[in-house]
Structures are given as structure tokens and as C-alpha cells.
Amino acid sequence: MDFNEFFNELRRRNVFKGTVSYLVFSWVLLQVIAILSPIIDAPAWFGKMILIILIVLLPVWICISWFFEITADGIKKTKHVPKEKSIAHKTGKKLNSFIIAFLGVAIILLFVDRFRLRAEKKEDSIALETTSEKSIAVLPFSDLSPNKQQRYFADGLAEEVLNSLVKINDLQVTSRTSAFSFKNKTTNLHQIAKTLQVGYILEGSVRSHDSILRISVNLVETETDNNIWSQTWEKKLENIFKIQNEIAEAVAENLQLRILDNIIPKVKESKTEAYALFLEGRYIFHNDFTEISLNKAEELLQQSLAIDSTYVPALITLGNIYQLQNNYGIIDFSSAKEKTFKIAEKALSLDSTYADTYAFKSLLALIYENNIGKSNQLATKALQLEPNNANALRRASEALHLMGKVEEAIATQKKLLVVDPLNASNYYSVANTYYMAKMYPEAEKYIKKSISLAPNHEVTYSLYALILTQQKRYKEALKIIKMEPLEGFRLHVEAIVYHFLKDEEKSKTALKTLIDDFALAWGYQIAATYAVLNNKEEMYYWLEQARINNDLGLLELPLEPMFEPFRNTPKFQAFLQKLDYKY
Image 1 (spheres, one colour):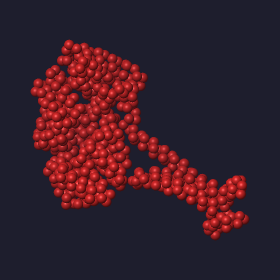
Image 2 (cartoon, one colour):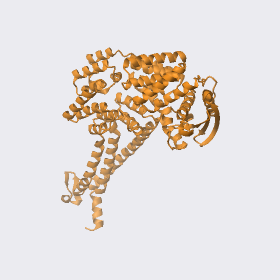
Image 3 (cartoon, one colour):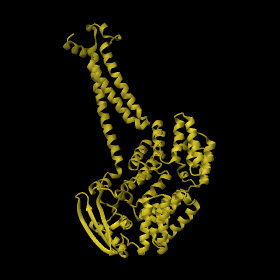
Image 4 (spheres, one colour):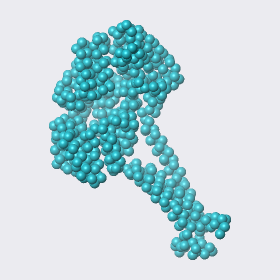
């Protein structure tokens, strides 16, 4: 048989059409799997396995098309079917119809897939999808002084200018966390603006000489890269509050905002020495969370307030230090509660318009009063004063999350991502809300973003592993949890994952180590582990221990998927009533 005869025989036996129909069918099948996998929580390997099977079966199908033929009497070997009795031409027409039909389905799926990818891309970039004309990032000011002796002051001045601009409701101001992440980096302004999606950037420098401060400020329009305004001040340190107000007002004016004098409240002046101590203490607090550093920051803030006890930003910063010391076990729960409430009430009595005071009180209502509704009300008050205040948005989203208002919580969290787009903790919060709502593919997307911003962040890998576990991707979860830097969380999740992998010995070992080494601080996680292991007696025992030890994890007990099997039982509901959470 020469080539032409062989080619004609391939056509007669419908080998070409059979192969095309197989390929079209395979493509449609893979597209259906790709679209449905996230919905049915199919494991990642499922689609790959189907693809491999289809590739392996292709030559088998081609051989079947060559060696066999469909006849009126059923399937027979082609060599046993006389050509005059062959109905291959009819089969070919049916294959044509099959190919056309499946190509139509393929086109529809192609549009569906494009729409899905476009929607995912849009959601991925929801915090950074547009640049507001009235948006600005205040970068940390450079310290050009000899020996860098003004680094506390340079950072502090930039932050105070930022805080003043946040008070303008029409202006979107990038939070300190994201704006200051570019400190000591060589990133150009165009790239910074693109990353933060802002229309303007304010940069500045500070230089001291013979007790005189020289402060230079530039306002840059990022779209055109034009320096639209610059100014230099040479003042003594005691005039710093006046300079701060002048900078904020000049920025607003050059952004062509219609503002009144009372839109940017004049900053209450503090004594120069007290202010310098405040700036240094806040600088340490923002940059190092070790016990030694927190104690040093506390000491500096106390010295500042001993000189000027009426400066509200110093009071609230000290209150946040006490709260963090409580979280790290440096001071106990009762002492932290007494100190923080005393500070919050004093700050409120001194200035009822300072948004961060209400945000701080919102946190205290949550932690010490179990009053989620009150926490939400206080956060709302803070947002009424400053709609773009990152702390207020954070507190509001947290309260809404704990109230089970998923859509409102997510909307608030995503607004926070707009003003604080480089803060890994914000993406963690979105992922956690989705996780508690059992929306695991969405949770996975945001936890990956959080990890990309802060690969060494504590607790992040634990949440990622739990998200994978809920999707029955246990081997992936085990690989992820090995990367968790916080040992208590790592042991907690390892015990769960090993249980699902049927390795009960390793599961018991991880749980025993967790109890032996972390019983006092990790009662809630131990209880959650026992919940997954379906050991009700131990679960309730450790829930009670968590309650006695004021474990903050209990705030999420009504939402945590690991406790789902017990959610509606009388005993579980009785325990929730004992917690006395107020909504």
C-alpha cells in the first residue's frame, strides 16, 4: 500500500475525524473540570490525572479507529467488513455533527473561562484596581543629619503629617505601614506610586545644624512625575507643631481640595522635650516587638507623659504598648485591663475628636468586655471622624467578622486594603474571614498574598494549612504547616493533619507536646484539636481552661469550622452562654 492509498484508507476509516472528535471532547472535559473543581473542592491533582489519562488513551483510540468499525450489526474488525457493506461514510457524518456540537460547547466554555479568569483577576487586585485622583502616600522623611541623630524625628514628622492628612475625608491616604515599607529602599517614586496606586507622593528630608532644623518637603504628581510643590522650613524644634500644620494645609491646597480650616484640626502642641521622647518611644514600638524593646518604648512614653500628661497620641501609644505586653505575657490580663482602660478614659476626656482613641477603646471592648457590639459602635464612631483611618477600619472589620456579618466584614477589610495595601496582616484577616465562612478557595487566595508579603509571619502558615485541610488536601497541608514559625500553632495543626493522614502515632505525639509545653497559653487550640479528633470530653475540658485563662481565641469559637459538629448541641450552646459575649 503506497502513501496515497494509506492516506485514503485513514480517511475512509474515519481515523482523522475520530482523532479530532477525541481531542475536542478531551478539551471540553478538561475545561469543565477546571471550572467545577473550585466549586466541588476537587484536589489539585485531579485535573492533572485526567489529562494524563486522556493523553495515554489517545493512541489507543486511534488504533481502535483503524482496526474497528461500527456496522449495523455492531462493532467489528475493519478487515472483516467488506467495503461495499461498510457504513463508514454514515459514521463520518455523525462524527462531523459530534465535532460541530462539541466545538460549540467549547466556544461557550471558552467565554465562561475567560469571564472566570477576568473576575478572579479583578478580585485579586480589588485593593489596587484604580488610582484615585485624591490619593496620597507620605513616605518616611530622610534624615540627612550627621550621624543620623534625627531619625526618630524624621519618621515622627512624616507620620504626624500623614495623621493630619487622614483627617481630610475627601483624601485617600496610604497608611503608615504600607508607606513606610519603602524606607531604606532604592525603589523609584514611579514604582512606589504604581504599587500603592496613589496619585501623589509626599517626600521630605530633615537636617539639623546648631539647634536649627531644616525641613524640606516635595509633593509629586505621580502620573506626570512632576514636582508640583516644594517648600523648606528652617525652625527651632519648639515650632514643629506649626510646621506640621503648615505642611498638611499646603498639601491639601496644592491638591486643589475645597477645605475649611476645621477640616484639618490644629494639632495640640506638646512640650518639646516630651514630644521628642514620644517620637523615640513610638519609633521603637513600631519597629521592634521584643520584650526588651517594648519595655524601652514604655519607659520613654512614661517619661514623655511625666512632662506632658495631656498629649493624647502619647497616651494611646502607651496603651497599645500595654496591650501588646499583655499579648506577649509580659504583664498579666488584669494589670493590662486596668492600665489600658485608665489610659483610654483619660485620652477621651482630653480630646473627644481623636479617632484613634475610639479605635483603641473598640479593641478594649472586644478583649476585656467580650462586647462585640460595643466594639463595633466605637469603631463606627472612629470611622465617622476619619473614614480612611486604618486602625478604625481594622477594628470595624474585626467586629463585623465576629458578628458573623461576612459581606460587611469583607467590604470593610477590602477598603482597608486600599489604604494599607502592603500590610500582610490585612490579607490574613480577609483570608480568615473567608475561612470562617467556609469559602476556602477565596481564603486560599488571600492567605497566599499575605505570605508573599511576609514569608516569615507567624500564624499565617497555620491558617493556610487549615484552609487546605478543610479542602481535604492533607499532604499539601502537612508540607505547609512545617513552615510555621510559631511552635504552638504548628503542633496544633500537625496533630490534625496527621490524624487525617491516618498516622495516629504522630498525631498523638504532636498533641502531647502541645499540651506538655503550651497548656497555659494554647487551651483554645488544644480544644480545637480534640474537636477534630471527636473527643468531646477533652474538648470541653480545654475550652474551660481557655475560658479561665482569658484565651482570646474563644472570640472566634462561634465561627470556627473545626467545632461545626458540636455547634447546635445543648452543651456547646451552654458554654457559649457562659462566655457571655454581647452582640
